Length: 107
Image (tube, rainbow, N blue to C red; front, side):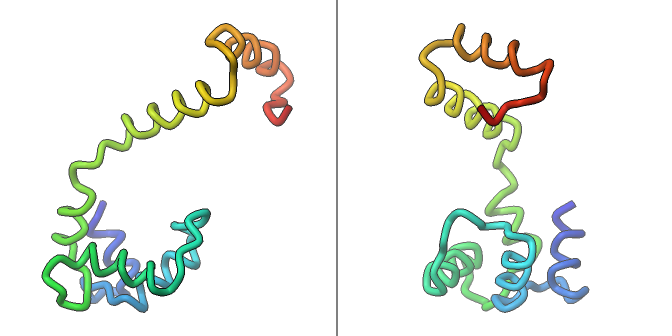
């Protein structure tokens, strides 16, 4: 999967330059909500490029994100959102039970 992403971003070169990384992030809104300045975007890219080669390889990507547990992160974010949005677990359950039939989760 990482290899396919890298090839898609890099245009089949297997090395992602900063320009390609920024273009991909912008066009896919991959970092939307972070409001990164150009300096911070360059710092992020630099942090992902530990050997300061000026490009990212599949190995760099795997080293940065390979141990990230997506399932646990989503569960933690859901738990945090529910905990900060409702006064109790019962209140959250009641909200979802009431709105599941209508599909109205905006209120």
